[in-house]
Length: 294
Image 1 (tube, rainbow, N blue to C red):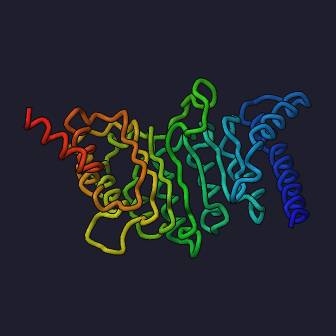
Image 2 (image 1 turned 180 degrees about the vertical axis):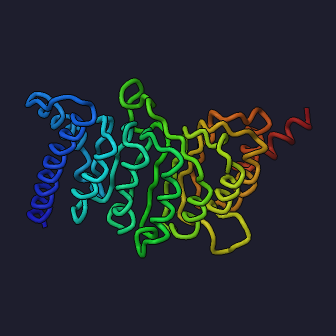
Image 3 (image 1 turned 30 degrees about the horizontal axis):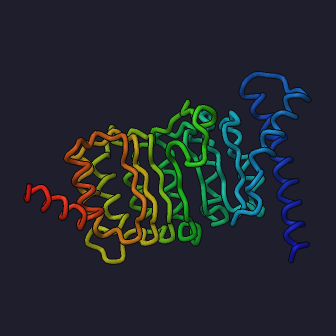
């Protein structure tokens, strides 16, 4: 068994290095710079450094954060990962990737090979959410195997002041349809991060919040929603209390949800108190009784 794992690790390392060489060539082409041996060595070193600590993780994640990857990199990554042993993909903070580069990765999700993906700060705009929705609807098993979808801001393990700089923060639009697809098809989804997308300014903001309410377990359909969802981040999305009301009203049905981040939105004191009352009704009742007694 140990020998098999060693062989797999060696194969993944070789695949990563071959991909890194191709990505470096694309990056130079996109920036108009001539490739150099020194530049390639620095790029390879950055990729290898990011790989540290991920090989033993379940599903084996390919981490390519903050490497200035452009649209053509998406196809190269999809080709390299097809049939490989990687089960996760982390491209956080590649603002030039854009909708077209990210869309090239969707076959990996549709096939079910990649079950965890992070595309925060990748310059995603209006075309990506509908494309992802179509890919998940068309897939047989991929949607049911997806466990983590992070399309938002700063990951918990990113270092502030370095790769966490959101130079290309996403601005997802037309997201209501994607949320409906997630609620319908992605029954194993555990993590959903939509932070730092200014979703409150989206034309379909109200429809998106209603879809989120169903996704976390609310709505009329008893079999609707992502029953395994444990973490939802909607931080820094320019929401106000009225707009978030349908979601807050559905929190009591979100049995699996253990983490909800709605910080840096315009909820005010009333909104914060309402959320606290929903999440901890006993504590809220005790506080109200104490206030009445005084």
